[in-house]
Image 1 (tube, rainbow, N blue to C red):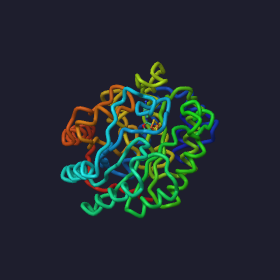
Image 2: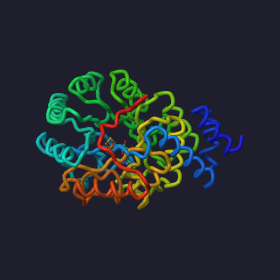
Image 3: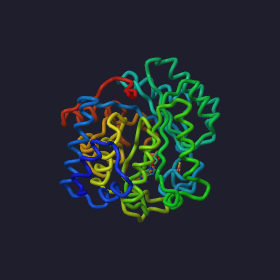
Image 4: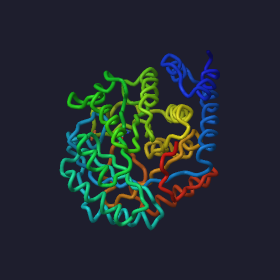
Length: 347
Ligand code: 5AD
Ligand code: FES
């Protein structure tokens, strides 16, 4: 089948074989990409209309016990400035976000042992107490099933944990031996089983990635059936082992967004900060390729320059209100509107 036929088949059947996905990802043209984006945006418009969900991101700790080769927060990075926000700091961010109209807060950190289940449950409960109409998303990396359960019972609604790459061998080229693809995938299945709205995801153009790997990522997503998928281009960070690796491509990322939308029409799919970092209009293009979520930063301005997963991250100098306003305008410029809504997954 030619690429055009494969794209139509994907729209109709919501899946392709690994060989078909690999062909499409390995050989797509600009025309193929634009055609796919149009279909994908059509699907997103059908499900969500012209509305874009917004999530307030609170990056509350830059400490991490892991050593991923791509990430600026890796523990071996002696140049990273580390910080931790207190419960009061975090609550202040959430209050400010609430005033700005946010109804979902994403609490994200490195894997920081300082935050025990007890501390985290208290934070989750306090936010829920103050703002009962809000959803809480956690993005804290790998934890035990027991811990995931306790946090869920404390009121957390969603959990983001990118699988990074579905291919075990590729995974081991991006991570030290202490981190295993199987573990990561098991965590995701556990999160789903507990009842979280669960998000997986990967970087596009990460070192050593092949078209076949991306096909495997898509089929992994199909199997897991997550409620959310987060993808963005790999961007080298100057204090990591991957400092000299090539960054991921804008077009490739847009194309992957569209394929994911065609595969899962109602999935919650952000146009990420990384996409906005590699290109000034990356996030707008991401929406037009089928994304339906944006995640402006709500972290206190003083710490933003310290949460540097990759180089040249945007929005690190802005106030929360500026980020919200900026994204509002960006969405309006392409005919979309940010909505104040928890933005839950709907079947
Ligand atoms: N470039 C792009 N994305 C990155 N992440 C970590 N480091 C980088 C980088 N250098 C992504 C990972 C992680 C998420 C929080 O950020 O996919 O899961
Ligand atoms: Fe923190 Fe990878 S360096 S999770």
